[in-house]
Amino acid sequence: MTTATYSLQNDGRLITNNSNVVSGQWWSLSPEETANIGNLYQVMVTVTSTDGGTLSGTFGEWVNLSTSPEWSLDSEDTNATVILVQIRDLFSLEVQQSASITLNTIAVIVDVIALTDATLQATRNTDNDEGTATQSITFTTSGFFQERHNVSDVSDTLTSYADVSGHAGEWATDGAVDIGDDYEIFATVIASEVRSGDNFSGDTEDSWLSLSSERSWTLTYTGEFQFGTSSRTLTISIRRSSDQVVVATADIELIAFLDAS
Image 1: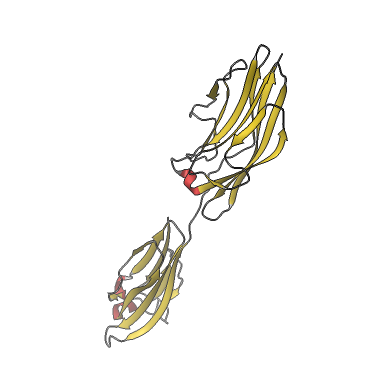
Image 2: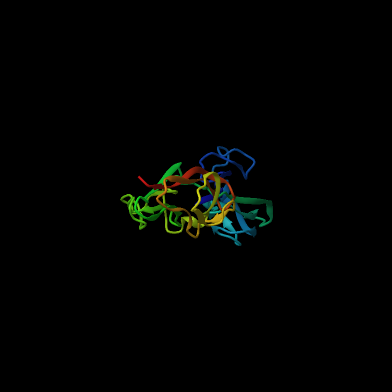
């Protein structure tokens, strides 16, 4: 949440953004000379335009400047509100000054991406029969990634090798149920070792995909009495959906190994 503030002080100062540093003056003389000049004036603020956020303060009616009134715009996004500020004296009730002021908030984005290079390998023994080595990686919507591969070198059964959190790792250090809504993922194959009997499948490559849905890629290698390695190296990039800024890139190698020894 960011806040833009505008305040007219009783002593003639103009203060913005909750700072004690004077941003200017609405009265021509110094505060030392006119400590209570606000006792003689009133201000009215009206909203000219706004594109979002929450406004605070008194709008559309005259307010005594002796109270040092303040107006603010709160927002988690980038927003702007234009206000018309009019000042009148209490004797003639005639407007003496007017100005158009813009309150701006700028979204502060703190990325919590923890993507790092990784090598993931599945091994399958094919000494006695045909078998399949399978290695996959899945990026979840809540900031984790899961790898699945053969439970042992003599079984085609898949399992998720996980740490204590129940996942193989994290692509976001502050994972939340819907953090994927704010990010997109891009996968491209940069290196490969292709064997007869292997297959690479999964979500679309070479295209930005929303992480509001799980994204996964899988390498399988099937053979009988074979020995060899099939591999794919993916460059994974993650960017913010809001402004398309890439915040993390890593190379992840998937290896499927058939062992006939």
